[in-house]
Image (cartoon, rainbow over all chains, first blue to last red; front, side, top):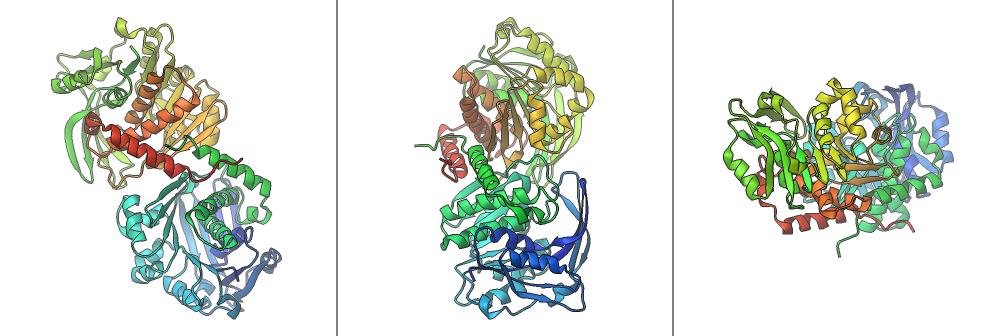
Length: 308
Length: 308
């Protein structure tokens, strides 16, 4: 398997100033897989769904070529459920409800076919679970991307730091970066995080783009694609990470140049994702739209000739 | 006169998580002039100070080559005073106190030597006053940059829109942009603002950089210079505008390419400014530090070759 993704498959109820979507399919693994499959043909998911998860969505994922051997369906419990309301700024949100449900029985072992995964994304899950999944892939994957959130930073810091030490790429937002290190300067935070193990730190800043820091001391800035309308920011970060790793998996090696292109692809897919509710937009990605946004993004940033 | 600046000369009391500075010299015109004088040798200020404004600071400005013919000193009233406290994020702040004092008697007429100004910055002031100053420069200046704030957007919208219609460059922050148009999409806001007259809209986003929109439909993104420590964000936006216009004035014409370099210079001087309390850092700008930050900024953004 080129790329294995461990993450949630969930049902989300989302309220935004533009409308409300009830119990639609979401979860990190959904967004990650639908983004990654655009770049690499061999993608598998480790996850669990409840008895209420729509079979039609699992069929859609399989029809897209996503392997679901690692997805367990629980016969008697409902799916992981999240309800949230976005504020008018479409950047901040309140969580209205979280039901862990089947998430408490997330599979701890992965199918044999996944144990030789070349690339691994550990979506936002308990870091102890992330580590158990990571340990089952032998030899170690070429590239491991780890995501997390404030919940784990607050509650399982030691386990999280152990997991982060094994990551090649840590992909978190600016708030999580500051919380993880306890410092306001992203520059100092980046140095502290990279000293713990990761080769690259990708800081997601929503409409303010992304920052990439490397262990070699490089800092790169990527603007977000400027949108007229954001309908639903849910899944933007997962879509970003999925496209980044899908692109890396398609290249068979990880260099700064490859990561740069991967981040551009992640930025573009995230911009497409948030223009529709849920992961809907990811089901019909148009290559010409990607190419047009890519050109605009690059032009937006090339404001000056390089110093000689 | 190459560049005339209308704006406040103030005393500020600033509290940040790093310390407190009491009644230090501030005000938009101070920051703008000290930034602009780095690029162009002929800069004058229109403003008013109170009987408590330190003469030493006026002497410092004059020693730097800044013309103060347009600055009135009131014999019996104190200077415009602002007190604010920055939050731990160093981006948001509470205004603790505002005393208009002499600001109510801001000069409405400008010295004859300023009436042929080639470039004009109208700092954040009542838009009716901005317009009266603008009208006195004949022939019309080559380039006019206008700044404003939420206070004027809420209270004097019609006058502000009339002033903005005469601006070449409107330089405001993202919140003000959204408030001015009443829309969350910066892209749509930019189109609406540019249709009202300005050739360029410069949106300042603090640590998230700046966006430049042109009437010709160009969108350019400029990252902020990543800092380890921000000691005092006061005056960053004014420093930015001062460097932008100082650079433009030094070039004698305004094109998109010149504006790009001007924005880079503005970004760098703002990053230097916030590393010390008040305008202190602007008194000793080092050309080698500017050059080193410029190279880093450009490298940070040149993440990819232009599409062929």
